[in-house]
Amino acid sequence: MSFISINNVWKSYGDNQVLERLNLNVEQGEFVSMVGASGCGKSTFLNLLLGREQVSKGSISLDGELLKSEPDAERGIVFQKYSVFPHLTALQNVMIADEFSQAKLVGWTFGRRKKAIKQKALEFIEAVGLTPAINQYPHQLSGGMQQRLAIAQALMKSPKVLLLDEPFGALDPGIRSDMHTLIRDIWQKNKLTIFMVTHDIKEGFELGSRLWVFDKLRDDPHAPQAYGAQVTFDIPLRSHAQKQQAQQLIKQVGTQSS
Amino acid sequence: MKKLMNIKPSKALAIFLSILPFVLIFFVYWGASSERLAENPNDKLLPSFEQIYKAIDRLALTENKRTGEYLFWQDTSASLYRISVGISLSAVTGLTIGLLTGLIPLARSGLSPLITFISLVPPMAILPILFISFGLGELAKIMLIFIGTAPVMIRDMQSRVLQLPAEQLIKAQTLGASSWLVAIRVVLPQILPRLLASMRLSLGAAWLFLIAAEAIAAQEGLGYRIFLVRRYLSMDVIFPYVIWITLLAFLMDYLLRKTSERAFPWYHSIESGK
Ligand SMILES: Nc1ncnc2c1ncn2[C@@H]1O[C@H](COP(=O)(O)OP(=O)(O)OP(=O)(O)O)[C@@H](O)[C@H]1O
Ligand SMILES: [Mg+2]
Image 1 (cartoon, rainbow over the protein chains, first blue to last red):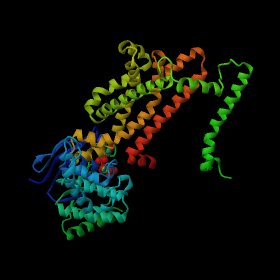
Image 2 (spheres, rainbow over the protein chains, first blue to last red):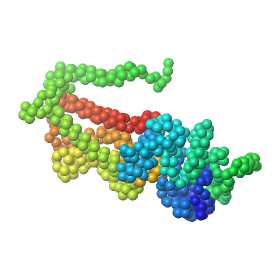
Image 3 (cartoon, rainbow over the protein chains, first blue to last red):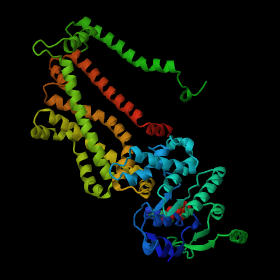
């Protein structure tokens, strides 16, 4: 049994069939990049994995058990924006993750326990390179710093699965490549399973150990909502050779269609 | 020459311009008042500054021979007590119920229609009911302020909670938070500054209800005094009382704003950056 198995999953909103016939298996430690046209259902797919939305048909299981139907600490997420709490400083934003689990009633920790949490939080903040900014509020941080903060926050819970929805979409190219190094390090060190939506196919190739392309196989121009998107390409990218092969393929497809 | 809309006054000019209307009103009043008094020394409509000062002296600076109290300060403390208890009750209620209905869909389904309904009842129309059920004492006046301002605050707080990005609430859950922890650590601190803003907006209504209630049934209070001396056309008392009420309202607004800026610096720098 795979770590995550997606069995014949369909998802619709009313008449709008968004996803259909998804049958996919993902092993622990894979990094799945997901690309596809805008509005084809990538975020919807992440929301299903997150438990924020429920499947219309089919089932998803995580670690042999049916996926919980609400968000919890097993699955971490970094959204494109609004991922950090505006009323907390960077340090508090990361500490809150453990305060949630250690102070279930009052929500705040004190004394030695607080110190221990602070120590741990500082390590994660260090890992994402935010040590100089620990006492700043999110609105005082740049977009890239906010995203790094959100990643540090998510890592505090050592989630089994990390979901990233266009996490670097709003960043300029220079910062993007720094973030790529960061996320690759974190992925390898923590043996995370990552799902990342991106609009940048190059980014998808560079980071992923596997690339999914979402697209509609069936399309009725008179009823665009009648059919959902599927994963039309599932490209392995584990080795360097595979990556090059895939890139070659994309180039060919690109020249043919243009 | 720049376009008019692009001309910004210097600091000194801005201060001068802001004081100017007050000075003008002062002189216009002075002129009108002396003119009327010259014609008829018993005229009551526009008392002279001397007469006004005498009234202030009589009410605020000399003690009542019978009771040993100062009427003006007695009125002030009675009114301030009523309005602050009333508005604080509203704030606490608005915060708890608004947070509950904003965050918990079950509570929203159960309470929202009722709250909307209650907020549409004109408070002045049920004032007689309040007097009948709570008597003519403090409670009825406080209840009027409460009923007049609480529903608006509840609805405001609820909509503030609903405006929080869903991403934040989901993020908190992925960090292991329960509904309770989301409420006290994510939602509450973010709507507290908005509660203070809501209180500032409700102050106007609160004063309205306070003065109305005092005018109808009271033994003391700023509103009571104004309506009492109306019978004797005592403009010399009414004017300073009205200015005093305005000052108090301004002061309360100022204090709430300063408190908010002190306690929630992150909120104000986000707001000013918008
Ligand atoms: N909560 C919702 N209710 C109704 N329809 C929804 C909801 N969320 C998404 N949809 C619909 O599902 C479809 C897919 O949306 P989704 O956000 O998953 O696209 P996406 O692939 O993430 O697009 P983008 O690349 O622009 O982010 C869209 O047609 C959208 O209108
Ligand atoms: Mg999306």
